[in-house]
Image (tube, rainbow, N blue to C red; front, side):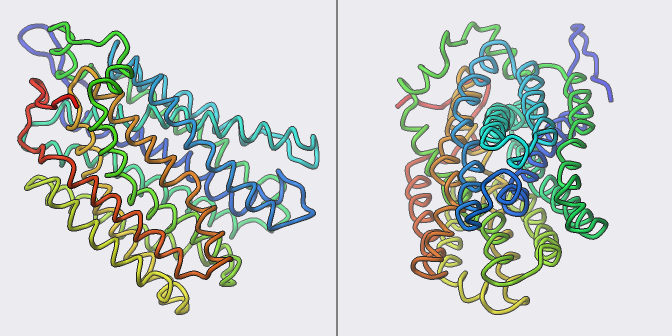
Length: 436
């Protein structure tokens, strides 16, 4: 894997190198993120919280799951600052390292039985570290792709880091499924659950190696040579691009709610209220994740013809899906599989162009910070408490209200899309993003 020298002595990244580097990093990041999400439902309520009230333990575990989403904006501001100041490459390496160290540390933590409440606090701290790393990773990976892309292929390039989500989810679900098959329940809860977290170290080293072989993006180089850098990118985003930031948050909202309903909430509700075994439901989700993966490249092809139009149609479909989600989920195994397949397909259709859409809303000098902050703030509003809110709604008012919750999020995303313009013809080097 090598860069191509130019006549000026500079090296440029090959398309294969760029796409693999953007994909491998987000795959690792989302693998780390999802093994926590799975463990937050299956493991942590039992091992890291008091066992006297199982229902409270589940809610407490889901609350620690949400901590990462509050850490994301901190990571976005921190890594975005350096990504817009010193470059995308160096920042991506540090962000990946932060996420990896936090994940491996979780695999080595003592449990509540050993050190009491301190175990819960340490788990929350490591979860914060995961969110910090992901807050810097996602935006940089997307920029690595689209700032190296030909003008008419930005949506196609931009969907490669998005593919890291279904691949990471498939790997995380697969490893927990294999552990459930190979180990007894006692072995799984004694040491088996730790293995995915510890094994993440191998993936992180692979990702770091790949990231260290790439060069800086040409768009950032040209911006830096023209002296366009901001002293404090985050301040510039809030002062001059606040409208784009707010619109970006709304554009992401339905995506976050939909995904965490189809994964974390569905796993929790399916293995408790609906009585599915852990292994069976993980297998169902692994089958359905293929629909997520298939939809991402399809959505990128459509988005090359128009980002905004594609997202508007998909968001309308998500609104309709929210109205039929509950009866499908309750209609036996076939209904539950079909519900998650349709939901994850729609997730892929909205997630594929999302990184490109957000990145094109901001000029190069604040693009890392702006797109990362929009994504992270949307995570707080749309994902951090989504499993918690959905569980409360289902237990208090019934499962249909979880679907109404999703439809409401789709309405807000639709409004966000109406507030932005079409960006497919914008020039990233000479940005047409207007301050608000």
